[in-house]
Structure formats: C-alpha cells, structure tokens
Image: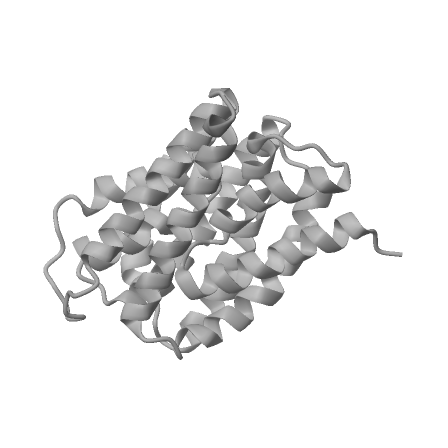
Amino acid sequence: MISALTLAVIGIGLLAGVLGAILGLGGGVVVVPALEFVLPRFGQEITIGQAVAISQIGVLAVGLSGAAAYLQRGLVRARTGYLLSPYTILGGAVGSFLGLVLPARVVATVFALLLLYSAYNLLRGLKRVEVEREPSRLVQPAMTFAGIMSGLLGIGGGTVQVPVLNLMAGVPIREAIATSTFIMGLTAVGNALVYQAGGLLDLKLAAGVALGVLIGARAGAGLQSRIPADRLKLVFSLLLIFTAVQLLWKYWGRA
C-alpha cells in the first residue's frame, strides 16, 4: 500500500511538472520549497541541500518530458539549445559543488534573491513586442550563471534562462520557454551526478518526484499554448515572488 508520504511526494512532483512545463521552470521553484515545508508534516526531516538534490531529478524528468512535447510542436530552437547548453552544463557543475559546501541559509537567500530578480526582469518586459531581436553579447555568460544557479538551487535554470533567451537573445517567450526546457534536461544530468557523489540524493524520494513530474510535465506543455504570452509572464513572475517570500520568511523571519 502506498504511504501518505509517497503520495505527497508524487503530488509535489505532479504540481511541479505542470507548472514547470507551462512556465519553463524545471519545477524546482515548486519542488525545493514544497519538500522543505511538506515533508516535515509527515515526519520526514529534510535539509535544503537534500531538497535541491532531489529537485535535480525532477528537473531532468521535466526536461525530458516537456522538451519531447515542445519538439513535436516545433517550438524548440534546437541549434540555440545545443550552442548554449555547454555553458549551462559547466555552470551547473560549479553550482552543484557550491551546493554541497555552502550553509543552508546562504543557499536559500540566493534562491530567493534570484527569484525576485527574475520576476522583476519579466515584469519589466511585459509590454515588449514579441518579435525577433539581435542577441546580446552577454547571453553566454548569463547562461553560465543560469547553470550555476541550476546546480546550486535545483531550479532547472529556467528562472534565468527564460528571461535571458527572451529579453537578451531575442527569442519569443513561447520558444524561449521550450528551448529552456530542452537545455535544462541536459544540465540536470551532471548536476544530479555531483549531488549523488556528495551523498545528498535520496533516490526513493527522487523517484516519487520524478514520477509526478513526468505525468504533470506532459499535461503542462499542452496547456502552455492556450495561455496568452503576457499572462504567462505575469503568472511566472507572481509565482517567483511568492516562493521567494516563503523562503526568506523560513530562514530569516524567525531569526
């Protein structure tokens, strides 16, 4: 019989998969705080480092499932993805190592600040016209930074990659989300290996999250095309702000 804990973990993965595929997040902004806040209620203590490690498997699952759906619909800029993925993979390895050695409060604070900055960037760009633009020369270093955040925070890098692809590389929002989903799957493989070597990856919990993510991501990729681009950016931004406030309260509100 499936335990309540297992059902909760699968439920977290399901929600993360739907939102991750719709918003290009990789699901990490749901998985990491949800695991931290929900699992203790079922008697399962977990650190933010362990949550980040489990989230890497969720990111891998949403990357595989979501990217497959986007590829079928022709939304993935495959050439852009292959050219930029080495930067995110390298950054991911660096970020994963930092995730093994930095204190939990530091990781959570960086996570929250990154979410707020990404939300600001997207809200600032809400009124921009969805047309092709010449890419900035800062795209490659920005994608390397996205990889570092992916490895450090288990967020898939989409919180940085989507704004970078949309606002700096000139890729329309729907294609930016699809390409980000494609890239994050490649990056998560290396990240997960580093956390496994560091002893933080709980494979049983990760399998439950991945199962939910695989189901949710497929549904989320289909829903994404039905949401107007401006509303998509607004929902993305509000979710980032909400998650950032939650994390800051947990690690600083009671200090």
